[in-house]
Image 1 (cartoon, one colour):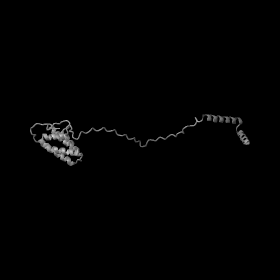
Image 2 (cartoon, helix red, strand yellow):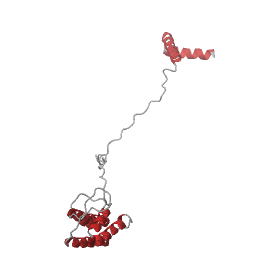
Image 3 (cartoon, helix red, strand yellow):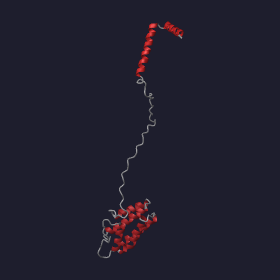
Image 4 (cartoon, helix red, strand yellow):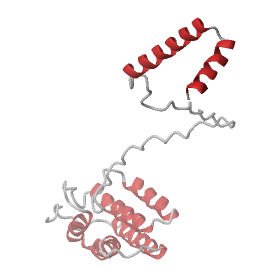
Length: 201
């Protein structure tokens, strides 16, 4: 063992001088001592992360779709039997447009409203706030009996569609047209003289 060490030392001293070898050994010993006393502060706690590649934008250059702005809430529609504050002819024209669109239930309602509005405008009945179309029609039938039959038939068809939930058809609109024509013909005749009342609620 001693001979092996002597041979190694002799081989090293042939290449490196003994003073330089001693300096190198002392320097190596100092590095080991410093590393030993400062461990593990110099040891990294986390492994280094590789930089991530950023995605390039698509060559098409298309921008992301922007959602459309929210539509304002629609105004609530009046009650089915409410009488709008509109002229009778306006309501009749509305009924024709609705019928052309195939919205027959709404067309029937608009025609009944037009009839009742004509009765109000001619002074046969008074427009009492809060009264429904059928209540006004009943009051008109009481005040002016000649319109009673077509008016009650009109109200019956209206109730059948809107409260009986029966699907409306073109024939229903044609029936309501006929009732409206009968009422118009009756209104064209002279009205008997007599007191005019607003009917009962």
